[in-house]
Amino acid sequence: MLDLSKISLQLMEMVRAQQKEMQQLKEKERYLLEAVTHFRENPRAYMEKIDSDSHHFFVAFPKGRLDEAFPLPQFTSVHTVMAVDGSQIDVDTHEIVLCYVLNIGRVVLHYGTGDPPLMDSLPYLYYRNEDLYKQGELEVFLLRGEDVAERRAAMEAEHLKDLILNHRKEGIPAVALVDGTLVSWDKAASAKKDIGGFTAPHFTDTFKLGQSLGIPVAGYISGSRTSLVVNTLRAGDCTQPVMNCASCQYRNDAAAPCHRLEGLRDTTLFARILKPGERSVCFYGGINTLPRHEWPLYRIGFFYVNVGSEIARVEVPDYVLEDESLLNMLHWVVYDQAQKGMGYPIALQEAHHFAVIKGEEREAFYRMVEGQFVKRGLASRVTNKELRKRTRIF
Image (cartoon, rainbow, N blue to C red; front, side):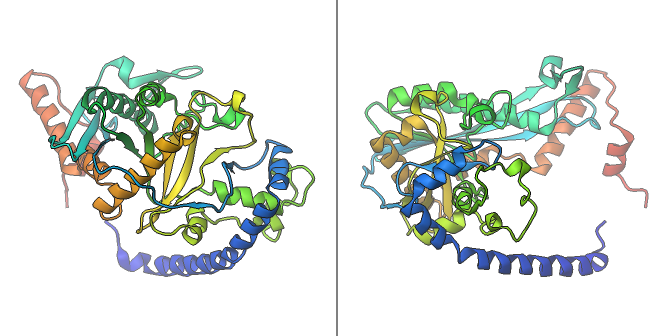
């Protein structure tokens, strides 16, 4: 039980700290447009500084002028939007059996064709040893929540590919969306750490299909907290001949020039640049510039778009960012979907509603499991901790 009276003083202290931090960020915001002007005047100096070493924070490389704004393009009202989202019940060692559930919400919305929408969810139960454990360097580990989430991302990619294969209409433009980032944070699977490119191994087959059919595949990120573009501008404040942040003597010196823009998000910058409906220039993230022939397969880039209620980040593979017609299609559809969803793409909203597993649904699932165990005459005892959570002595 949370005693609010005892935490109220800590709460007041937290609010004061937040207020102070907001004031500091407002001071930093004053330097933003100044930094953009300096970058526009001499972008090569920034790139040379970034390429001087690889032991620094991730940055973003613009495909053109960093502060350029692209207006909302014209597009046909006849089109299809496909979306998937996933949710999960993690492995709980206090329940009667080790298992986990992945639930994938699927949505296909046809506009101007007269075809009915597809809206459903598909649940998957995993309980076998090969599903529950993974091999570490020295021993076998029970899957953690982040491991299950990684498998969920792979399943989302597979279902999005299935929607493209089986639910697109011949000759009708289509866009495929997922909620959140495309980039895999599995360091073993991603080329991000090695050569400075962002990749999405789970989506490779989906990208191949999308590219062959002229369908953009994208990840829509609301409330983005990344600072890759701001980090690029910060490179201009580095006073060292080589940009090696890992061993820099000023790394923890708050008064150093390179900390002048630290803490600002990209959305703060593009809120000053983009009008409603406009998108930013396209960016590729990494730690160093790469010639085109060294790019990983389907390198992931991104752009920002002002949907009216917020500045959203849209992650996309290079086959879309390098094709103006696909990029314009995606730009228009993302903005239109956000208007239909009152600030968030309506297709992703519906996919989330079908995917999400509520607390009472989780409890109902485990009671169903318990009922089946009893029916089969199997032991159905939960741990003492779980039992005490369900019941009270006092």
